[in-house]
Amino acid sequence: MTDPIPAWPGELVTLPTGKIYVRSAPAGAAAAGRAEPAVFVHGLGGSATNWTDLMDLLRQPAAAGQQPGGADYGQVPALAGEALDLPGFGFSPVPADGDYSIDAKARTVIELIEHRRRWPVHLVGNSLGGSVAVRVAGRRPDLVKTLTLVSPALPDLRPRRIPLRVTVVCVPGVGQWALRRLDRHTAESRTLGTVQEVYADPGLMHPLRYAEETAEVRRRDELGYVHRVLVGSARGLVHEYLRVGPLSLWRDAARVTAPTLVLYGSNDQLVRPAMAGRAARAFRGARVVVLPMLGHVAMMERPELVAGEIRGLLASVASRARQAGHADGERSAPRHAATQADAAGAG
Image 1 (cartoon, rainbow, N blue to C red):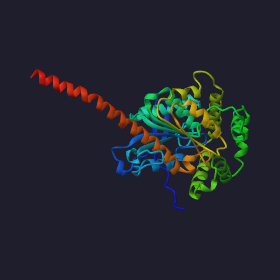
Image 2 (tube, one colour; image 1 turned 90 degrees about the vertical axis):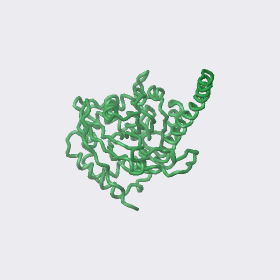
Image 3 (cartoon, rainbow, N blue to C red; image 1 turned 60 degrees about the horizontal axis):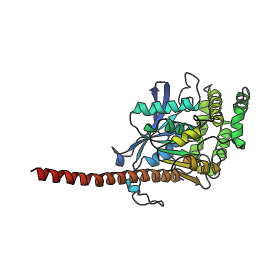
Image 4 (spheres, rainbow, N blue to C red; image 1 turned 180 degrees about the horizontal axis):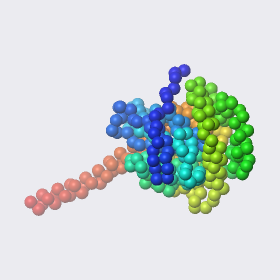
């Protein structure tokens, strides 16, 4: 087993609503000047480092040839990726206004995209980050070139054990108490418990990644605001699950115009893979895939598989663009010929 790459370097970026920490994976040398921008949004309890391995794969030009769906990898752009720590997560400060809603998180992503002044972007989100990405793509279609969702946390009121625990955390007084009890366990134990919940096969996580995640748990234990961030974000997500009408996340999904890829894990303990059916109906023309023997964070468990799916999406977009350009050329040819004939007649 080869050692994994280190986390991508990052910096604090000042936005209108506050500062956030952003990690960047520039495109490889072979794709310099031709890469397209991408933004990655993590889930509840996660951070920008959840995307480390996937960003590394996508920053490289794809190998030429055909994938099973017929897409030509030679036409797939490399992605210059940026992964943000949502406010209060990772190395990002807590939001000054204490707003942990999905709307507030979507505003942060929109502000980052506008701040970089390179859009539309390829937007990728996991779990709660998938909810945020759907809101951005549904409300600001001008900013999004493609949308990829990995186990998106979209409203589903059927009870499951782990999501029910998230709901309990939202109860005033109970959430803080439950999290304090959890903190009695060692950082190693809590890390292992989390991995067992989000991976179908915890053995796929490299020992160095375990060590990195455990060190991050210890670091955040010292911050003093972690419980507040988790409880506030959980409440924001539950609020979206109960919201109905034109402002709901499923209505946002129906508004998405960008080419969309939605990935579910067959062994996901948090998001039911059966939601793939509803996603296929909600997102117009989307490719919806249930990945076998994977859990809630497929981009960490099998990054090469997720990268292949994303490259298939990018290849299909590039193919449609070429076809549209060819059709435009054919339509302009008769007009050009007629113009030449008119000029000859006038002469």
